[in-house]
Length: 469
Ligand SMILES: Cc1cc2nc3c(=O)[nH]c(=O)nc-3n(C[C@H](O)[C@H](O)[C@H](O)COP(=O)(O)OP(=O)(O)OC[C@H]3O[C@@H](n4cnc5c(N)ncnc54)[C@H](O)[C@@H]3O)c2cc1C
Image 1 (spheres, rainbow, N blue to C red):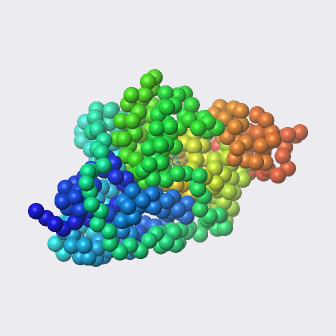
Image 2: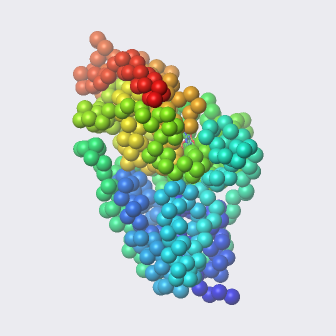
Image 3: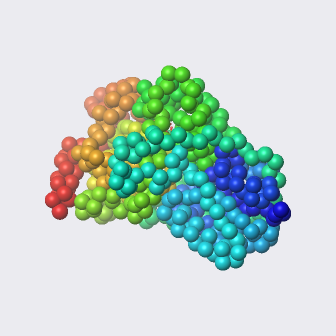
């Protein structure tokens, strides 16, 4: 019987319950597990300060459940895991499989390097209900449209969530703490961000596995109204589980199991979890779609990149466009590190279709500020909105931010909450460009930065130009 511990390499699965890779680690190491997290500068540097702070809070919560035994090291995971294995006498490393492009490359490198030294690295399970790559069309090719993917996804019955493995003995070792994570994060910053704020926000979000289950329980009590209210940004009607899912404090299997018996609930919530799986699947099959358009015909779409474009980008990112719903969303992103889904779509559409900027600029800013920033959901949420991705009827869908505000925030609850200059105005004035005109115009709120109709026509003309080659 082996007496050497197994190293469990935590990445995007920062929980103990329903963690099949951890169960396997416990079996492998005769219940002695050395829990490790490696701060890899290649991954930490491009993350904005907000998500890094949230990750830190999640890791601190994890460390508490590990009775202070989380081993944190900084550097290249191959070097650090090898050193740790030598220190604790481990011959096996377990981790949950990462399906994103950079994670896959890293894992192949690490597995090769450790195998060379006689240490086995095993990857188990995934962070999704259905692992990327598992669903294909009838002809065996990847699904490029959601409907086809969804049909396959619905046939899969997720396994019952696993309990925390019994009797694990945590094997601690030297740990360098998490200061480096906060210091390294944000050190790779695009020039076009200019003086945009870098402070970490999002303190209002709780972190860790216990908090994730509390949030899930709370959501389960009103999940039956999700469908009717999920598009109203002024209401607390969505689950707000995305930060927990992002770092794996919760697995989507656990969410589905917890909600399965909610009376009066339809399947619209599962639809959203399926979008999450779908985008991970698309990125798995098309790793280049992190930065290249999924639809080749859209690669020649003309976007602006001059100094005026950079100015427009920064005005958008500061939430000073003069369009209240867009500004409310961008300011929620600044203050909370999160944005309601409906508003993400409206703000993203505005950047691409009214400001004629590159979707990648917007996606970068979202990834910089979002605590739930996830490369698959974000890049493909952007590509969908930009009309370059998986949407079947893409570019002509141009959200009018004023009409969207009237439809989804008719009383101006969301706008007034996030745009203080408009807080004293009632709806519909507070929803109008520039905060309404004439009597209701507010001197401290910006005038609309562009004319919607003119820019809409410009967008359509650029679209036509791109399509004609
Ligand atoms: C431009 C753009 C960028 C986005 N970037 C991200 C991102 O970086 N990270 C992220 O997790 N989501 C992203 N989304 C998807 C979505 O906005 C968020 O998942 C959602 O707002 C999170 O809030 P919630 O947990 O209350 O969602 P709910 O409505 O309660 O949904 C439950 C879960 O389903 C998943 N989900 C919901 N909607 C989507 C969707 N459209 N695509 C993929 N998964 C979804 C999320 O994991 C979410 O937590 C983006 C959407 C757009 C349009």
